Length: 503
Image (cartoon, rainbow, N blue to C red; front, side):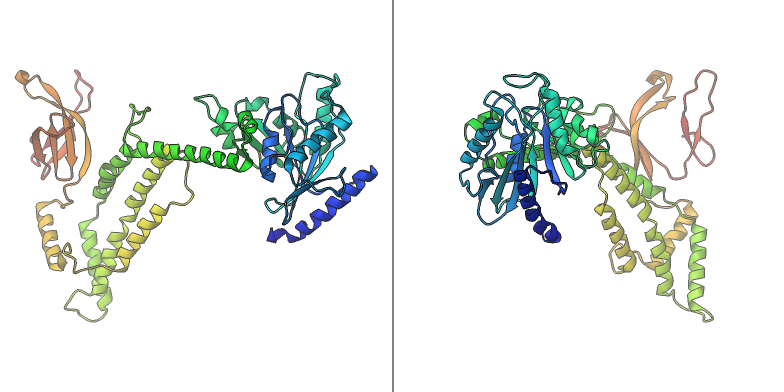
């Protein structure tokens, strides 16, 4: 409101000019932006308009109820009342009287037998609960004439509607019920004729609570089916039973809020079930998904990426030596300088960023598959980068896990002599494999559940991992493929010792 103060002052002046020109029967070419409400019969146009005002004041009934255009000027003020242009000076405080006056003024021009007229009714509503807007309620489209309606009733109503929505300054509020096919929407069809690019059309989907079971309006509300520049808005209006029972607008808005809140809570429940694995009606039996896939990423894929990181021992020692000598310069040092230690260790810590961020990307991708929404900003990534940066900023050499330079050198020398590097017993892969050549008496081959870690490979009777059959340490072992023979083309790896003997 404050950012558009000049327009707020201009609107009342132009409204007065419009009233003056209408009384003189002269067309006014100066147009301010207006919002025209377009839709078929019983689409919910009146309820949408009443929600703008917060009052129940429009005529209701079956068939065509709006038979003359209603130009509704909303003006923000301290008191709440209504004025008609044809009842100059009379203030309507009771909005039931406003409804009765609309019906009486409509019948005065069109008669009481469903006739129509393009002559508008001008109504002003002053209220502290409204914005300064001009809304136009137009008759709903009908194809079969009834009562005193002319034979070309459909064409007359279309001409009446086009008189307003052809203006470039007019926003089109295309109202369509959710329980009808959007492709057959009369409102969108009319809007497309004057606004083919959908630049000034706003889609309003009513009666979301009356959709058939098993259907939803997701594609429509996500602007995928018939895209509009300004998109679609879903609303839940009062039913005819609510109207007959005198349910006011405030209670209707509260019920609408409760409806959408229940939808969000259901989405939250479904999301939690998918992630936590507490069970749902739709269980993926083809592949891992949701929480199960995320569990695998953290406990199998991520450790595998860490274990897969390798470095050249000789190259590392060479870097350490160069760092020490460059820091000492022309001097000969007796102790290892801290700066050399920090430079080497920071470089190794920094290598953890890539597998960490890769794991985050995989988890986010899976979460996106669950909720069908991709977040533009991933705070988890930022937290991980911050954690790594914190580790780079300060290294706690007093920590109990810090082994010290001397012990590190001893372990490095021992690993060089033994020919292997200790990585920790981390799980790399699990799954079923077949062991061949068990002997003719034992059946020749058998399937077992294998667990491959960085230190050993074990196999169990089944995936419960309760009954371990054997564990084979990987120290000093090599892996080679068995050459394919003429009897079989199956891929079979063989573990051998350094001397080439089969294990």
